[in-house]
Image (cartoon, rainbow, N blue to C red; front, side, top):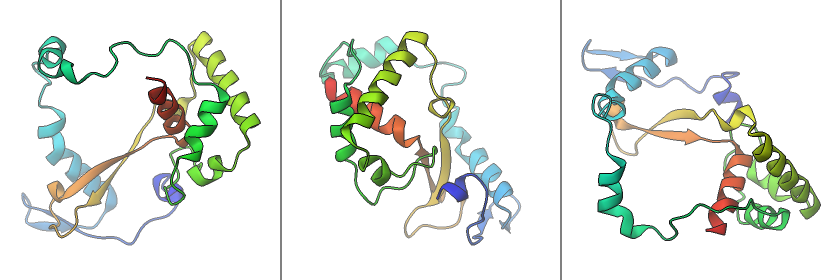
Length: 171
């Protein structure tokens, strides 16, 4: 998966049908452009009138379990515990770490990671992989080959997933 995301190898080419040109597209870059073009109706639905946070909060605020974000960062033990809960068959993240590899790290390694998280927070500097999310388009099961017949999947850094999960656990 990491090699595919980093464009170091190509998956077997499938075709996506372009209804505007009445042709099948085999080039992966053109497929990506076509999918993005058709998903713009979803991506851009609020581009001219951003949604109101207050309206959203009024409608769904009663579902909040905790109105305040945690003021402390996870401890090494909490990071370790979260890593132990990852599924063994989960794909590698955009940082090329497989969750099963992170799961194998000893608790002391997570203590060091917690120290790094604290330093990052104090300096307000975070790994560049935390700012980037890779999005892949996967065909929906038993669907056609048109652009909207694909679902978009965000691939985050595996470390970020564990750290953000541990922060969620604090709530």
